[in-house]
Image (cartoon, rainbow, N blue to C red; front, side, top):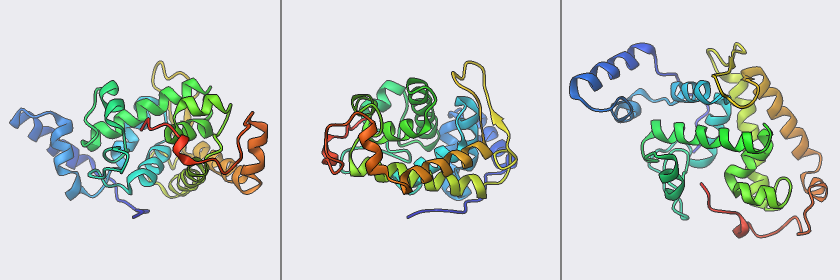
Length: 231
């Protein structure tokens, strides 16, 4: 299931949730996660995580759509859990509960920021690494020759373009997300759309042939089982 038009959670909802968390003594993220189904949106969570980790919310939303179809209860056959499909070991390293949508989005944003820093701000490689693992991207000096990963990059790029052009609020206005110690230049909503266009152009003009420039000795149709189960 792919959700393409989700209304945002308004500020009054967040204030009510904060009040309830204080009155019950429960953590804000826990109370918020309990109420998210009735709010019907994760958009504010993508915006908040994007601002914190200097990542386009459109990228986070695209990953959530591709990974779980916005289902926080999703569990894959490989054991990946939650909205952003994080593996249990990765969740432990990040110190999060992947079943909690708030923590799942924050954890994925933190991990994507790490990947972006590792690959010098290259969003294409960060997306590939989210799927195949950073070791595979490093080993092949680019997008690994796994059909699953190649398709994943195409899919996420298309979703990024869609969400960048259709989103309302700060990102649609081109506001940059640049917290302190971000590690790389800020990404605006308009930049995310342009990046998605470039990714789609790359895939449409010969993604298989491009692998020959990435230092890969394996055929383009290599088995997806070589991809690392990182997330």
